[in-house]
Length: 115
Length: 115
Image (cartoon, rainbow over all chains, first blue to last red):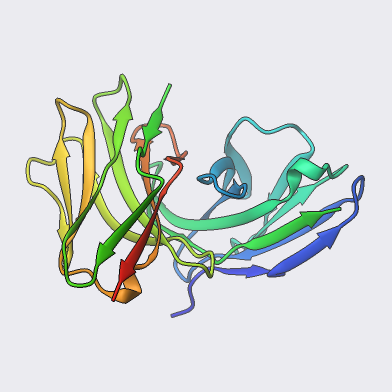
């Protein structure tokens, strides 16, 4: 049973560029959340997607956007990259029941470096 | 506002000894969930144990147990008979159950098991 798959594993981008990160949820899960983990910090919630819509958003600027596809996979897009966007980006999938998510499962993350 | 505090940035423990990782939380909600995750150097967040705020019994999962003291707002993780493979970062996290999908994480504790 495949867990959460994220790609790419590592990425180097130049300040001002745009980046797209991808996530395939665990089999049977229908909800995807994205987190940003800066070095030495705990993960910070970016947003969550359910039924192809953004259900909840954390305190991140509009430069961070996402998408969920009919097969439940998801993309995280970051525009106009800043040096401070360098971090490990984690995807977590879960199963929604009566509006509440259960069984959070995390991927290994994409390490983004902005130079 | 939610807040998770982990006051131990690092701990060194002898192999086979028990270890307690501290976590205190702050919330005004009556219904919430508390999680512990392990993050090895690979980056993946591995779920260890969950405690619901209305659960009367402390949660246990194999060698992991959660010492839940609701009045003190603490949710300490206890690892019995530590093993070398337990060396990793450990994060405490909280989620309000109704209408809030966000996991709020602490800053983590780096646990090193000494042979």
